Length: 216
Image (cartoon, rainbow, N blue to C red; front, side, top):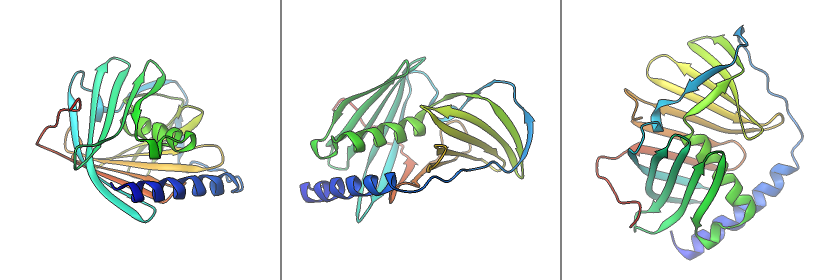
């Protein structure tokens, strides 16, 4: 990603984040039959194998820019994950760790190292790679079950659908923030879609067979 593209992307993200803060509050309701309010541990299987590196080809469309790269995710410990995004040219865009509830930016390129942008990226990629939730309500929906949980003061709805599809939504009490869909035939998702509802950012990931060393 060239310097001019990164600078334009940074300016656009900051502007849209400012505009989003001005939007009026809209409450989101769940349409389904409540069947259980007992706390239940949910395991999202797609990034949950200990010491295994998951590699995905990444295509990211952000504002008027588009670029390809590679996403690498590794579950280092029970409550510890490392998430790295690199460009096709091998340059690291960011290197994040999620450890025992902490979010750590080990590295991020200067053009994206702005507080608002960094916080959004940390939240989106934690949402993408988080394996464990505790449900506080379960609903029966058309085509599957829906569980309600939380992620850093945001509500997460987890839809377990039929036909090899798993869908999650991230929202505050007032804003719909992101949608995440896994398409999978096993515990290593074939492809993943993460769409921001706050900003014009879409991210698509496809399973790779060729591995890359995240420390390079």
